[in-house]
Every structure is written in C-alpha cells, then in structure tokens.
Amino acid sequence: MKILTVSSPGYRQLTDVFMRSVRHEPGHSLILALTDDLGGEISQYGTSEFNRICKQKLEIIIDTLKRMPTGEVLLYCDPDVVLWGAPSWFENALIHSKMDLMTQHDPGSGHCMGFIAMRATRPVIDLLADVLSGTNSKTSDQDSFNIQVRRNSSVKLSYFPTNEVFCYGAFIGNMWTGQEFNFPDTMQAFHANFTIGLSNKILLTEKAWAQRKP
Picture 1 (cartoon, rainbow, N blue to C red):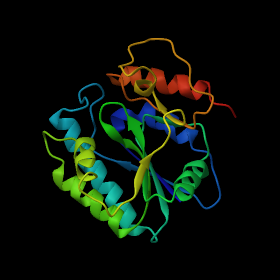
Picture 2: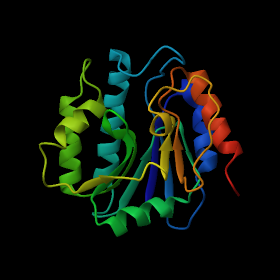
Picture 3: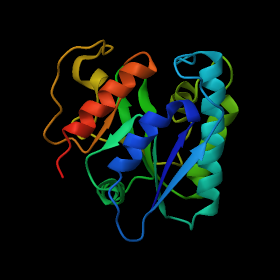
C-alpha cells in the first residue's frame, strides 16, 4: 500500500501534521509530492488558481497509480487531513467492500477528491484520466469527478461512512468559522475542508491531532 499527499511549500504546517499522523506499518510507503506554491491564503476552493493546482494533483495521482503493481491500494489524502486510524484500516475497508475506489462524502457535491482509497487498475486510471480532461479553470477536479462517475460503469465505487471519514460539513452541513464541535468516537480520519482560509485549516487539524489517541 502507498499513502500519497500532494502539497506545496505554503502548506508546510498542514503537511507536517498530516505526516505525523500517518502511523508506520510494514510494507506501506508514504509519498509527499509538491505542486506550485498555493501562496498561503491566496488560493481558495473553486478559483481558477485552485483548479489549476488540483489538475497538477490529479496528474501526480495518475502517474503514481501507473507505477504501482496492478491491484495495489493507494490512499490519497490532501495535506489538511489527519489520520486517527492506521493506513491499513482504509486499505482493509476498500478490500472488504469489494470496491475499486472509495472517497469521503461531501454534503452537496458527493465524492470528495481530498480523500480517496483506490486500487491501481486500468479502469481506475482511465476514469481519473477522464476526470483530468474535464478539469479546467472553471471546473474543479471534484466537480469533474462527480460528473464522470455518472457516465462510467466500469469502476465500482462508494463512500466511507461520514462518522469514519469525517469533516465538519458532514456534521452540520455548513462552513466552520470557529464553532465548538466534537469528533465522532468512530472517526478514523478527519478532513479540514468546509472552512475558508489556511489559518482555519491549521486550527482544525491541530484540534484533530491533539485529540488523537496514541
């Protein structure tokens, strides 16, 4: 199994927390890839700059899958993710589900491109290539993915339960602006989306890291 995150120098503080949260397990390797610097607070979800960086991210995911043995599991996480569970938990969830690909569920949009467990297979690679083709300055990778999966029947996919791969939006269906909330006891991963700005993402990931059990 491989664990991949795609980050940038401006997201170093987030990336450091993510890297610390990945529990070491034999046979698993962690890959950190860098894109252009997002410039801290400059790039926000849905902007043309954000979509350009997401296209680079997709290219890296596809290239990584192509280099992996057929059937091996790749866990992709954005750098604003904190893992509570061991990587093998997500690998086993995918294997036991008999799916080709599983993602975090985002209320309102569906599959989240910031947290994906997937098998290195030709159908998965071809699906992501189609997603890449549909990603442009006006269409994010996530929007493109949710369009493509409705057209593609060759890849079996599903969601992780929201109480296991959790984000604030799944809890309240809105953006986090400083409200108090508790993490589910069953949580295995937290994604600090559904908030605006790098500083808020740092606050959320630090909260998740501080409450993670050894």
